[in-house]
Amino acid sequence: RWDYPYLHNPFALTGYYMDLEAPSLQRSATDYEIMWKDRTVEALVRELVEKPDEPVMSSDLDRFSSLAIRFLEQTGEYEISANELSAWIPADGLEVITLEDLAEFPNVVSLSLQLPEIHDFSPLSSMTGLNVLMIFTGGETENLDWLAPLSELVYLRIGGLDIRTSDVRVLGQLENLERLDLRLPMVSDLSVFAEMPGLKELLLQCDENADTSVLREREQIECLFINGEEVR
Image 1: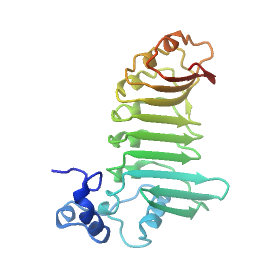
Image 2: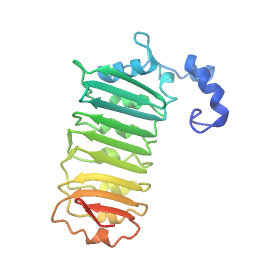
Image 3: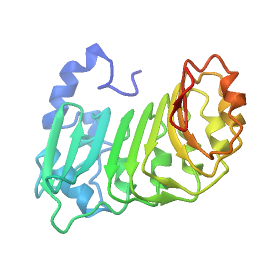
């Protein structure tokens, strides 16, 4: 049994191209029309899968393993990329307000978001298969609890986001994490990072008065930057 027939399965190649036109009989039994929560995400996905008017079905999206949504300030456009496909739409009157629709991409393992302002990241909690998560936004969040279910993460990078908490114990639950890039201006206790056994690369902006010795002593962190200083 192969749970993700389009990911790393050489025997699924024929089925993959067949499902681009119509889902298999087995897939049709569980297929459904997507009910959108965000009109900007809807417009982007419709452009991507070339369905401007007809219903977008769940089977249209479950073949994608990577997803990126970006706002391009220079051109005033939104861009969406999934696997080898890309599409653009003008941002006139459009803004991504909620990330709820991303749950309709059940097989995405790599997600990149570059959006002007997002405050609620809780919808990402359902994307438990993520290995890579990159977020660039001018928004803010009061906690990082939404990361707890993402136990498969290997690489996490969050830039621009105003993280308004000193409690980052949730990061210690991400046991597979190898690369981490975060800005945590309110954090002075760095012990959670020292206790992450698989962490190999850490780029950290933290409280200027934080005791960094606990990290400097952890030689398993091969690449270490703290508040812009290259430690090794």
